[in-house]
Length: 121
Image (cartoon, rainbow, N blue to C red; front, side, top):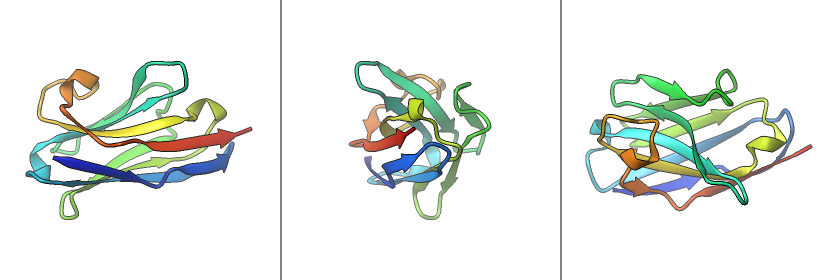
């Protein structure tokens, strides 16, 4: 599975961004898709995930502000980010996996290259 993220950039606090992750190479529909992020000097952390069934999971820090969705016809997963804060600044990674723990990075053998999101105050 190959994953390519797009949509990152520099925004101000309170603004919105939408990240996209296009998948290719295998059957997209059977995979859970996740978004993780890594800020400078910190470890990679879970942001959101969506199962093939559409069940979603969110980190407490983004709940109510971020929305994950998928379009199986386009083999694409999205992360809509609203009310962005400076602490959301990080490289955001898309991931695909077929395991049973969609909030854990170990669930995902396939990763994208990352997309930088910078939120200025």
